[in-house]
Length: 376
Ligand code: SF4
Image (cartoon, rainbow, N blue to C red):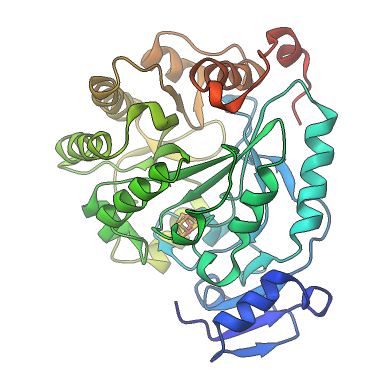
């Protein structure tokens, strides 16, 4: 990764993350100011370390009353990403497009503790993946390393670090105490090559998954976005085979599946930023959330095919599989039923983790408490 500049806010210049960045990027100009608003792509080349301003823990932005949401929390500790996925929603979302990392880990953890202590009966899942890749800047910042260590001491939360990288080497010897799940977004190599530019190859991601589970981490998998193209059926079947030949089923916590989606404004951005990409050319419909998706029969066919293949390799293990940003009627078509609400799906996650992973030492989740919760 070649950063053109590193910008370090004065107030966090003495944090361990700032010191690590200065040491690992010796040859890059270090400035003490915050980069002004810049173009999304240009901003990827400028690393900015900031203090925590306001709250960083929130429910995933996908939550919408028309759709069933998994109730994952997100930690906005990174913003923007050095990779260049053609479908990345950040190109139409971020205001200040510089690649920012919050260097003040203690403040982040204080907020997490306050939140999880306010609902001790609940088992939270929270990840740093919403506004960037959880591990893309890890060789320089080691932010994930600090978070993993801090989360290892927290009772009712899992840290979910989701990536398209293979950058796990600095995490392998940590005492994570099973409070971190390392997660990979996966696609066939042809999709990675065309649409997930600068990310790790499929083989390198599989190698990283192997290192991660051997280091005792639980693993989650994300087929999201699933991309439709002429050979998708064969390629996704092969991808799933490769994955299950790599990772033992009993190490997989959950699998999410979602299809390509974007709003009409973002469609224009994709076509302007990545004119060579063909992902906007398939037939799509606009949903209640103003996002365009493949037409329903296509999505149903793809989801059913993926799940059939996943179950072929995991028949004896009840892995939690869920759809991301789909309505209840799609759940009915795919699974024959749907969770009653976001709260109910949150409970199902906790129940699945409680039943399948005694190593987490969870209290038995109480459905009544989950259903009474006002989701925040
Ligand atoms: S890895 Fe994620 S955050 Fe980074 S460019 Fe791709 S979609 Fe965007």
